[in-house]
Structure formats: structure tokens, C-alpha cells
Image (cartoon, rainbow, N blue to C red; front, side, top):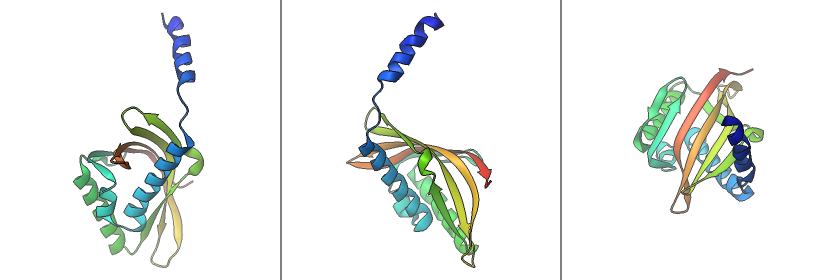
Length: 159
């Protein structure tokens, strides 16, 4: 039975529409804006406004760290406070070559990729501190892409 279904599955995968360059660019921009608000601007309210009310955030080291928008806002605020107290600045870098975007039913899109994290110390010297993989589900609401589900996993130190 399995041997009979494999060709059908393969045909279905081959027939799946390729994501448009426009969708990829839209999600790329939404991703950049979300991480700029959270890391560069350290604006927890702005970052939270880029998520759905029921957003969830899962992290391989911390577990489920957000079950709604306000949880995410508090997480970003705590991260920003920690960097302020420690006189550091965090930066997230998307590994451009790893970015994949796929359309999902009901005005949603799936984003998959790798990112690197950098920390700038009080002397202004930046160090690559680690990397991870991520999966994000985005939902279009009133013409805006909002992060609905975020999974950050496979965190490892810089090579």
C-alpha cells in the first residue's frame, strides 16, 4: 500500500505552487521589522504589536515562553532591561541563504530559516555569540503580516 501512495504523494508535492517572490519579500520585511523592534529598537510595545493576540513562542532552551501577545511583550521588555543593565546590545542576523517561505491556507505563511546572534559589549566591540534555527507562522490581518507562532530551536554557540 505504501508503495502505491508514494508516487501520488510525490506528484502532489511536485504540483504544489512555488511561493511567489512577492510573498517571500513580504515575510522577509515583516521578519526584519519584528526583530528590529525587539533587538535594535528595544521597543517591546512595537514588537508585540507585530504579533497576533494569541501568539505563541516556543524556545528549545526556555520552553514555551509566550502564550499570548502580552507574554511576548514582557519577554522583550525583560531582554531589553537585561541588556541595558549589562551595558550590552544584542543583534539578530538572518542567514539570508537559509530563508524559505511557503504560503499556507487562510492568509498565513510559513517562514523557515537560520539566524545568528551578536552581542556588542560596553566598549562597542561586537562578538558573534550563537546561532539557531527558527520556524514562524505569519497571519495576514487587515493587510499586515503578524507573527502567530514562533519556534526557535537548535541553539548552539558560534562556530
